[in-house]
Length: 265
Length: 292
Image 1 (cartoon, rainbow over the protein chains, first blue to last red):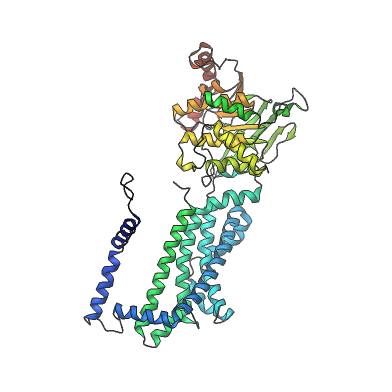
Image 2 (image 1 turned 30 degrees about the vertical axis):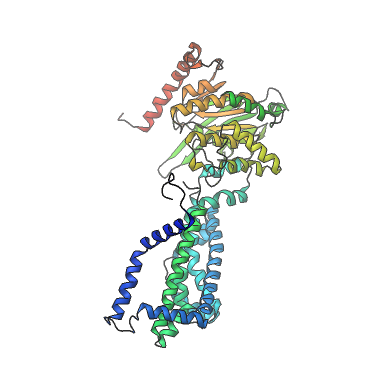
């Protein structure tokens, strides 16, 4: 479908075309996978450092069959989703209100500046002391870690709202709060969506690292458990699962963001 | 232009028939909008800038007034004060003898850089104000469509501003503002960002729309020809701090399709240009300091 004048390709042809494009795009990954397999098969590295990709795949199937993979994936996604959702709602509201009202900015701005550069993984033991080993501590950690990039994105975006847009809305009959919703928030979207993408990546980082250190379930926990057990094929299978989930989440998010911002050219 | 006329006739009934009487309810001779002794200063880190100084200016209902002056003379600032967008520090602005309140549907505005909501389609933009007025769904859809047709954007209802040319974007902005039955229409160099040909066409169309809708208009520009073509009254402003230097009445008949070539028009442009030239020179001098 690259040429508008060409006859419409059959559905099968379109699928083949998409497949070929996908294969070309991800060819480097395929080469990497083949190299991995070859290096492991030839015994160039020890099996515990890098088990062959084929045995990792077999271990992945076993993990899936046993139900361990799904149960722990679900536990992780629940924590990540809940923490991120909280961060989105509260972070966006905070950022927009900071941009909207000077006193709110004066009150919260310095706190945001102080905590933004702090590595949030340092809070792992703190959240465990507060909320224990279960879901609560992970959700709190992810919330705290992801809120600031969202807040800063919303703040910068909302501040960039064009004053003539604000004035137009006012003269068309929008009150102050209405204007906030109808003008400031959508003006903030491009920067806000950038902040959320950062937050999404942080979610995976904080999720797995907190589960590795203290948890009784989750993908991070599973990696740690399998590694300590010497079950390296399975451990690699879970590591690859986490990598894939992060990648898929980011791609889906970018598609979503492009759809939301379709009004930009 | 003819098709625009036909559509404008269709739009006319959407305005309340008593529109021009709004400002005349209390007293036929009292101005609808009064700018009384308004001064405004703003502070930059280096200095205090006096934007306008003791401006007095009256607008009667159905007047088409132009504020004309060199760049930086504070004419846009004055318009923003009339709109209620900037706080008034000294002096008063009255509408119907009452202090002008915060921005609202009694005063509509069209900005130089269009200020359409980029995340809304043309229809969405025109509907926005109608939604805020609490107009019933069917009526506002119909009304929005009438004004989109009037400015010649039929077929572009679902386009986003980023997909339109400058002239089309400005038409959409004009439709959005006109769709609300604002008592007063404020226009801040609305054609300043358009190319010369589009600007010329838009000026003619705007005059048609004004004549059909009998709006009270305050129009800001630094273009003398535009001022003489559009205004019944031209308020010439001085270089900063902006004051009203002179008010020139403009009786030139501008319905003639060749108006730009008529002697009356050319003479009026010369007359106004002489008044502005001096101020434009001062404005240049103020910005390019030379050794005394």
